[in-house]
Length: 310
Ligand SMILES: NCc1[nH]cc(CCC(=O)O)c1CC(=O)O
Image (cartoon, rainbow, N blue to C red; front, side, top):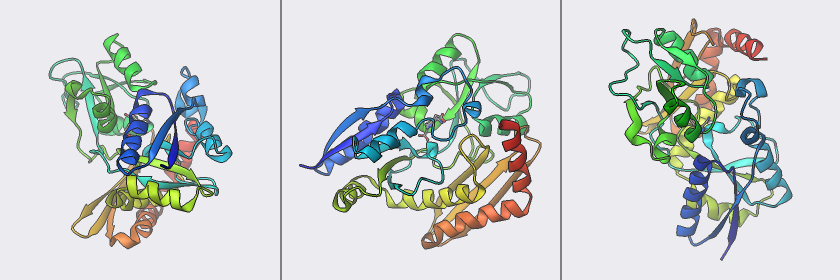
C-alpha cells in the first residue's frame, strides 16, 4: 500500500482536517500517516495577525517539510492559503465545501446582531468581519480575539466578549453547533475566499501517480471549480488573508456565479461585484470580478488598507 505522510499543524481544527483527509485516503486504499508540525503562527499568540504579517505564518514550516521530503502533502484550510504559491508548490485537491458562511456564537440566550437596543460585544480578529460589522452593525462593540477556536470559546466564557463571529465550518467541526446563536447571511457576510474547504498542498516534484491517486481520493471537482474562481479573484486583487476582501463562488445550473468585494477597515467604503461564467472559464471569471472592483476604486482602498496595516 502507498504510504502518504500528511503534514499538519497541531491545533484541534487542523488535526480534524488532517484526519478527514486521512479517512478519504484510507477509503481509496492508501495508507495515510499524520505528522504534526508546529508553525510560527502557533507559537506567537500575543501579537495580532495583521501585525505579524500573515504571509506564511501558518504554512512556512509545512512547506519546508514538503520541500525536504519529510512529508508528502500538507493539509490546510483553503482560506488560509495565499492566492499565489511559490513555483515549486501547488494545491492539488480541494475537499467538498462545508456550508461556507459565518455564524454568531454565544453562550447567552437570544443574542442577535441586528438588535440595536443592545451594544453586543463581539470578539473577532478577522479584518473582514470587523470591517463588515463596522459598516452594517455599527451598534456592535468589537474586541480583538485571537487564538484557536477553543481558546476563543474560553475567552468568551471568561467574559471577554458576549459573542464570537466565526466560520460555520470550524464551529461545526469542533462540535460547537449548540452555541450557534445565528447563521449569518452571505450578503453582507460573504466569506473569505476558500472558507469551508480543506486543501492539499504538494511539491510539484511529487510523483505524478501518487498525486493522481490523492486527487482521485480527496478532490471534489465542483468545489475545486469554485475555489479556482475565488483564488484567481484574490490573486488579481493581491489580497492576503489579513485584507478585508471577500469572495464566494457558487453553482447556478451549469454556470459559476462569483460574488466578491472589498470593504475598507473602518467600513466607510464597501464595493461588491457579481458575475457568472461557464465553469471552464472559472479563473477568467475571478479576474473579471476583480477588475470590475479595481475599476471602481478597489486599488485605492487596498493601498489604504496596506498602509494602515503596515
Ligand atoms: N483564519 C482562521 C480559520 N481558518 C479556517 C477556519 C475554519 C473555517 C474554514 O476551514 O474555512 C478558521 C476559523 C474561523 O475563521 O472562524
